[in-house]
Image (cartoon, rainbow, N blue to C red; front, side):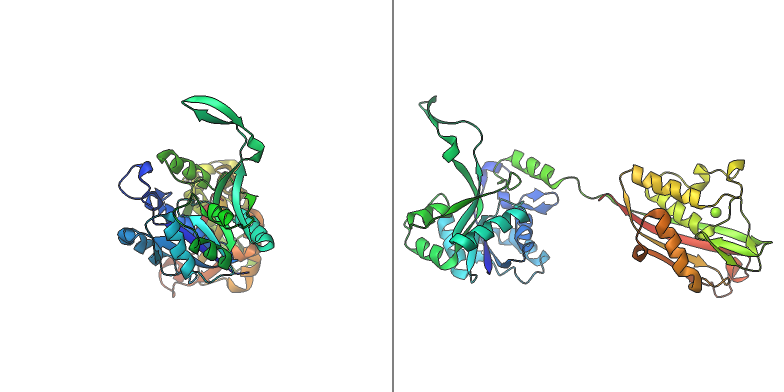
Length: 380
Ligand code: MG
């Protein structure tokens, strides 16, 4: 089954206010129509997307088309004098077995609703998204409630409306004058068109408040933050160093109040930095005797806990050690594993790498080890 999406976006949409058509107004930072196009590109059953535009909107549509690199988005088709004529122009450009005719001002049609309506159309040749009416429905005459209508029999039509391409093209060619929608044209041609449960999310932007509703549907944008940390510890007496929780034999140890795990300190500070909650020294003052000789894992666990408490998850960790010795490479697998276990981040998102400073500076003179770390955290 191949589906051509025909997105009708040639209308002027004057009810919304503002001086540009509603399908080009901004919704969460992107034009409404751009959201609509992406909703269809999200379905792998859609083999082409044909947008029907008004030539007067060329300057508004061009940047949208340029921003989308998917080859399924075909060159825009010019609209007609009314919606019906615009749809007909789209139909003449379509090549799929089926066509899904959709309003450009319905930006949020969910993928599962598309799946449902495509499935029904494949079985019966014609289907459309719709919602059953749950409120009482009254026919109003002369400003007064006159007749209660049987709401069980009433559905509110949404789009897409999906048809066998050849059948609806023929129905359009034989139809005279405008119509409310394409179901009307199909029914007039004697086709059986089945309603398929749509979605409240699939709202049509008509009034200014619809844009606000759609913004709410899209939810809060993801919060993405980075953090970086840097630490140095000097060499002193000892026979090992602890790096990322791994005890590595060496002819000297690192000096520090805790276990002097310079790498873990840098990662910990990167996490505190990402949430702007101070640094490791503020959370665990060197003057506090309880941290003497402490395993630095305690510090890292606190930072991980604070990141989670702020509603973030850690996307990745990248830590670089700067030293001439000991050799980091042979130990990096276990070091990554340790960081992954403490932070709950999968190992393929944790990097531990090393560089020398070409025998320059304090690390080059092997007076100590420096470490720096970057992290990325996000809200979902
Ligand atoms: Mg430190």
